[in-house]
Image (cartoon, rainbow, N blue to C red; front, side, top):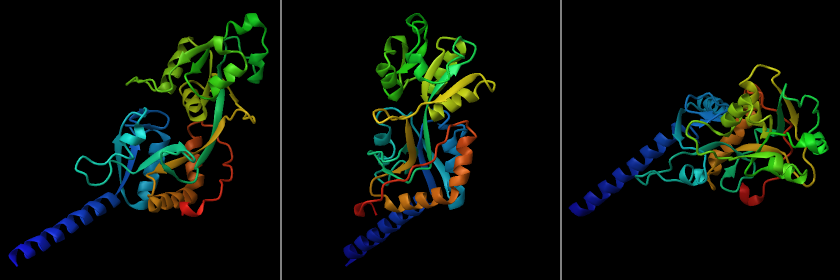
Length: 286
């Protein structure tokens, strides 16, 4: 009888502990983020994803908590999908920015849509360029003077290859591995130094670079998608697969605050396009 009572007491205590852990988790808006990734997120909370996370946490009456990790290969595996060391719950619950339909996470409805941009430093001999296509049609001797950044992957590099400009590209890594500069910070530094004169950058990164210099320092030309090359994409938030309740909660917050979210993002000089209609959810997505 005594053994049974002890076992019952342990079961009750275990249940209480699990409930307490669950309540504590629900009291927090736990975000997985890179500590040095402007304009997205930074440990000083200056990124637009930081601002949107703070808005949502406030509206939910939750404490905003970050699990910081550089956005490198394995980021989702080591944050969103990683269990706590004590085996109770996960290290974080939300990634504030992932491509809509991203297969490594369950994604919310999109909260903005942007495009890649050809960013050209003014006063370097390229002020006559008003359309990216002009670069492919320049005389050979002028093409050879191009100093354009070229990333290891992405539609910008594919566009350079398609237009016969790969030899003019200066190589950059999408994930720098640099603890002091992310890719946007490095591009900003090298543009200022004259190491490069132009770059095809994802909209938020282009907005960051423009914001670091006096207004009018750059010509920004939006890259237009074609049937064989896509430049514009929708961005959503990511949660763990199967975390449908949290996904629904975020969807409701996005719908409720979409105008304010767009205002936050627009203040970072990020080009915003209309969000395209999304495919209807399948039955097993409910």
